[in-house]
Length: 343
Image (cartoon, rainbow, N blue to C red; front, side, top):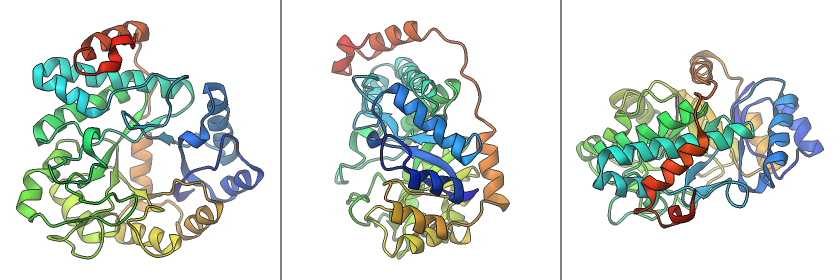
């Protein structure tokens, strides 16, 4: 298998995509709204991908809740953004933690039912007042201790539901004054400030199996390369001061923050251990082929990290999902308006 995760163009595997998946052997698949019609269709698509690739490959989705939720009504519930859990946490710490864990457990039940076993969540970024709104209410708060507690509870809920979490966007996207989907953000805060705030939030979540990098330049550490392609940031910050030793995947290499061809972006992200696995999302076949051509076979330390992450996949803990939905709606009723008719 090769060190990349691929997207697909639509709700079925085309003949060209089937041949690509079979020959290129991506490590995994990521699903977007364009790939989703209904639960039965999505279940078939996931199963066919695994059948063609010839193994129990991970299938990922961005299912945070709020603005970032690829599976939604009418077939799946609408879930709250992270900021709603933060509001409850401010009023009642135990209730906020319980709600975050239960909400994630319910998301996991939705995902497992269609064969998805990795959720690109929780977000552990700490937004600041003048930052671009791309993070905004996706964050669990603006203070590291609260973010660690709530993001940790959310991750535990996913794991208990048989879904692996991916913490993002390491080492922090909260201060970015630009949307990295469109252009490259520059963060000019000094190292001491970053260590005490942005990096501290991730430091409390190092036990999670997978993390996603940020397409953000931290000028105090590497004034040129974004974290995704910076050996200095990966070595000194992510693997160093933060202490993260799990599987590190890039954010989408087709985003506007990065420059160069797709092959150059892929090689830069994988060079010198910057990332273990590259993520490519948009389903454009020419780009998929360029990423695959530049991605090496998954081996060495990267393969060991990938195997260790997938070894943490497990069957969901036995739970009364209907009762959990009722409890979740009751917890969220005063902090998230849709909860009024949720259960």
